[in-house]
Image 1: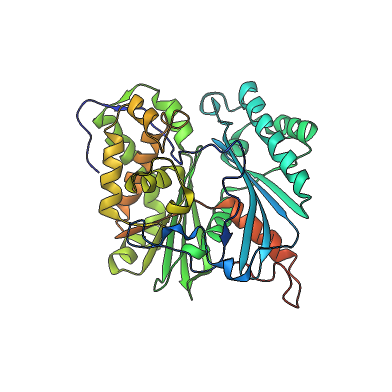
Image 2: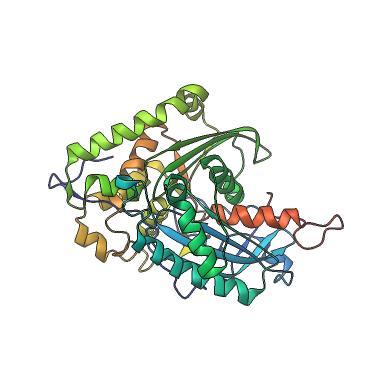
Length: 389
């Protein structure tokens, strides 16, 4: 990755570029097998999330899934179809639950209040859809916070939602399940990375018939865009500091690489690399020159590594104000973008796969598939098949 324009890099940001307070930006999409798009262009990208539409609109019971991260609170409500699920409602809001967590190991009152307010919106939506089953999981911020029980009790009292902190391993496996339809064909391994607000998860698994098989290796780095941005501050980040951060991340990737020989596998070919994070989806949107973030055009896009790095260099060269103005980043994420780009640079330097699949999906989709599978009936009723999960 290029080292910028020599004027320093403004502090960083996790992209994704959208806040859906109206909550229906995900509605109407269907997930099922073989949805990946290729070539790093917009061609074929308008199909949405997957191919389950052949089964028609779902009419079965609704299921709800909440992914509460360090930076975002996200909800999906969906109904099962014969080969996936159809999303009927969704919600996403930047809450920065992990604000200040890197310095005092506790969730601050303001962050908890913002998050409870967002979860209140989720609770109203879940009640309106009369969901058969709902699961709300929390990731790194709640794993680390010393006062997590106080937060969980507050959420329960205010919204009725039962928040469940999950391990990094569970988080990674839900993410992998949610991305199964993007694994494509002709690969013998998958390397998936998720650059989050409080941590970065890397998943390595063999593939058989385009699906994960055998042991799944999960490596969690305690480095996320929110915590790193707080550590490095909101000011300019010099080229030297950026490169040192890339080295720092790379050093934490080395043990997983050494244990599984991932770099050697990538050199031989046959590895599907999937990036699921706001950083990667923002790069996909920027590559497409979108006037505003459009998930249906970004999810499943496959970019050549060189093109991904070139777009990353362009965003890294922007100052903070320019990232504020960027239509696919915005003020809510502009201060986080550079940290995500540093993590991405380390991943791509250590594992230079020729192409990276861009995923705007993950934990929520994995949760939905698991709940629907648990309710599947032997005669092939609603939820019996879920996008290969």
